[in-house]
Image (tube, rainbow, N blue to C red; front, side, top):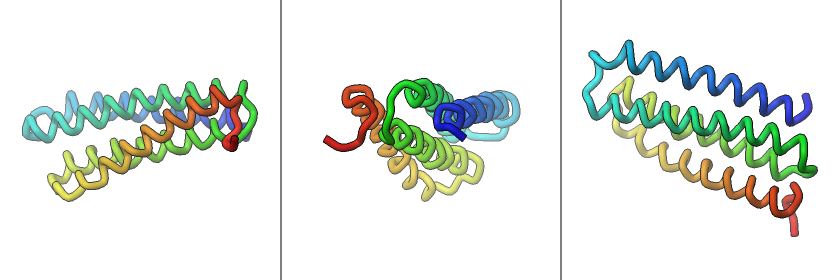
Length: 129
């Protein structure tokens, strides 16, 4: 599958999951979680949805910029979603605070993904000099 279609599909699916998670949090978890854990869950949803849109931007960019940098950006944003939002979802649902140690790794992946996407825009999609 071409990268533009792959990241369009991944971004769309990720957005759908983020909306479902948000609805689940708002309607299914509000009465079950402490305000602190609910806030963590909602933070996960917010970052999940923003980065689903980022994957759609990657899909758009991958159709216009040759090279591998745009795909790298997409994979980093996807990894960030799994690590950052996934760890916050798991922390909120289980109460296991140790899961919070994974969250910053997702944040680093998010930052790296956006930097690589900016690099691709400036360099025309290539990774090297």
